Image 1: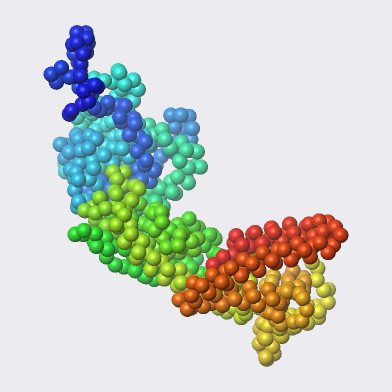
Image 2 (image 1 turned 135 degrees about the vertical axis):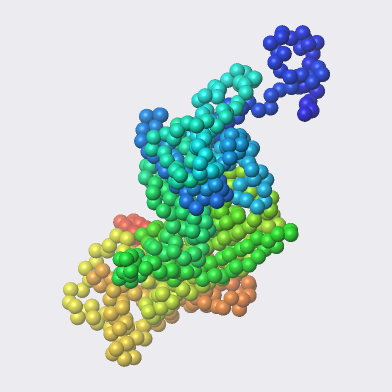
Length: 603
């Protein structure tokens, strides 16, 4: 390896250096510097960017590649070396083909892999299982055997036993691991099939999973691990491979809602399915499938990637503003808006938001849209795959191709989503303002309640509701009127647009716990702002020119500004507006802020 003349050349004084420097190899009159300080480099590589879920995925990958049908992860908790509660040991066992002694002896060697740089397998770099283990623990032990009658052999790497932190002291070190030995399994560790083949990996001296570092508590950490592994390895779980965490068999979690028998199907069956049971007393798990909006290939060089886009099933969409409720939490939906699942060789390697790839930015309701990109290892360069199987970064050409296609499918998904919500709200939507009023009514349940007592005579209430039905044009028949009144009676607000004389833009009538609102369609504010904006919102796509939309937008800004000025002017008509209207301004502003924050994308 060539070096810079100023750095690599030796002076005449160097030539007379003491024999102590003879340990450094020389080429001619140049002295070489050891490229790799083993123990220090291993300590540095502990910070390779693994999450605990990503780290556990590495030995699971190896188990799958070895042909395992069963993989068991055991997370043990207790008091760690730091004296805090947390994870103390992690065991990953499988019933795969195991490793011959010649392979096992090199298992812990950085860079060694029987599948090195292969474009046919999950792993290829020869660093994943080692760096993953060291990212959370200081000691790694691996037992394996490739034949039933072979003994279980072990290799071990312990950071505490291979040197300190002084670079000078480590200059001439030889970092290596011992040959496989016949050490027995530690207490509490057993192979999946004690009489068969397989591999057992033990991470001990765990020093990076104390409570408060990776999770509030270890049970929460274990739950997060289950969720992530169920999604990462969903294709293998769906294919019949068993993966368990602390004895709990994982069900596949499919963010596209296409696979059957998933975690989501179990949750939805429990919440929405029939309560009767079938044979053996077990409830039948129903399938709640998504609508496939796209399933197509993207040509990349001489290979192809596959893009799939789905809209979640109606049982998940339900109605507006339920994307964060208890059922949505169980289905792991909140916070997934704009996320794309990248699946390499049937194994998810990233579940992330790719900047600037969703059309018109990411919307909160995009959490109901599933997007997946599947590809094979021969496209690793195009997808920017890294040795820690994180941080997928499609190259510019591929990103543009995905973005172009998503512009069509996400737009379609958003339209279908709104149609589904409109259909769900259809029984309640009888008037111009009802979609927003219904949404505001849902939000109102969490807002502070008014103190207006309203009329004490029930007959006055009935008359007021009957008058509102007449103004809304819902009194053609007695049945129609009564149906409208019963629907309005359950709502905290009711709004109708009606033509009435005078300067009032709004007329309010307060009942007990309810406000009846009339908008004056004769008023200039309605004619010049409300009606034009409504026409723009309802116009079929492409029927309005950009100039028409801009004109309405400009007039809307003018009208809203003038509304504020008019209100301010109206306050001046009172000699002490602060005392008279101060609380009104505060409450109005507070409710406006809350409603705007929680009611959106209704129309």
